[in-house]
Length: 558
Image 1 (spheres, rainbow, N blue to C red):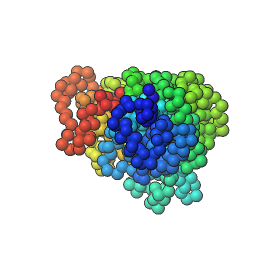
Image 2 (image 1 turned 90 degrees about the horizontal axis):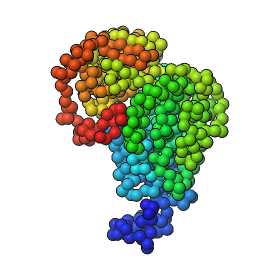
Image 3 (image 1 turned 180 degrees about the horizontal axis):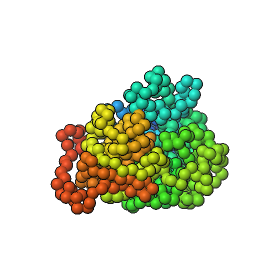
Image 4 (image 1 turned 30 degrees about the vertical axis):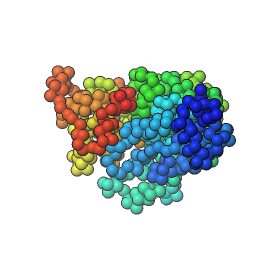
């Protein structure tokens, strides 16, 4: 029996009184009995008025619903949380993984209780796209994800400007090293009206992951948030979900192991956000694939060259990539390294979707034979400081920091590190260790603020390392190593080092070590003690810490 058949009460009494009540309630809201016999499609929207990446999704949802109705379905719109990382002014403890996992739970609760036959999900930003994809993998019904497009460029003093170049000036302004009129104009005019911030941050990275997985329609990841193409695509997604329902093509039929490996390879080709090291394994594990995903990241880092040099590490924006041919063109160039036979939401394979893709700018989208660089976007560093691995955005590391050796400066919180940095206590050549920021200790707090303020001092930026068991934003640059595992709160080596211990990093060799003997590390671990300060945090976050799993599996619920 298909899920929608419960609606025809003349022949199906399986749900008894509850089904009759539901039928009556639907009629009471103005839905006809004929409508209730159609496939029920959840339009899972994350629209709100306080997230620029999502502020336009109400309009896209209307187009989706129109397509569903015309194709014979009955759409019902439901909502999920959508916190924007860039809008969070308070302690950012509720983002990224607590928010993401909560969103996945919301979708599961709503879609399962309401017995949707299919879903069209709308999201754009950092934690929401992975939360939606995790839920799609859990629920495993026909699903399409419509992502909200990239933000148009801002304008300042007669030129188009990329937001990341205004964001970079915060530390410079704090130091009084920029004309404040120019600085204020940049801050006020560098962001567009809606869409994902126009650089290779987590939002755009995850939109690309959705398309590489086959869960979004072609070129969705590289469409202007304000352009007509996105609204046409939303309408087509509404029609296409009915094809998936009629042919019983479910989310896990698309999100296979090979599709997930495709997404990892795509990530390397675009130097995507370091946060994908959490989000892709989370999606995979929700789909039931308990594999060593960080190992696949590491393998892909040695196989896949950089095909497009997008900001913050490069000169190009998402608009440039769009104008050059978009995501289809990029995937076409990468296709020899991908499994092109993977099914997508179009009902065709990934290779078929990209076969006829045009390319208009060979500098923005390079070939495998003529890449930007053979160095990957992300790398996995191992060593006695990170036995389970750590993540580095290699494409954003300055040339002079490809090898590093320096004394550890220990900060047991982000606030402690920022206070020292602002007081001038961080010196050139320091290895700045920000620890107890991991999932178990502090919900996977980002150390991005520290890294951004460090960037405001060129001497420090080009000589210091930042090492953390917390996250980094997709806009991370410099010698910034995150996700160090095991995290300090679990007694990992990062929790054992002391002020002045020498740390060495070799990017080419993918190593990060503290210059201590195994015996000394074991001696320190024997006396290590740390407890989560539960009294400082509300129940939601205490529940998160109690149930969250390892970073290597993406931080899903244990």
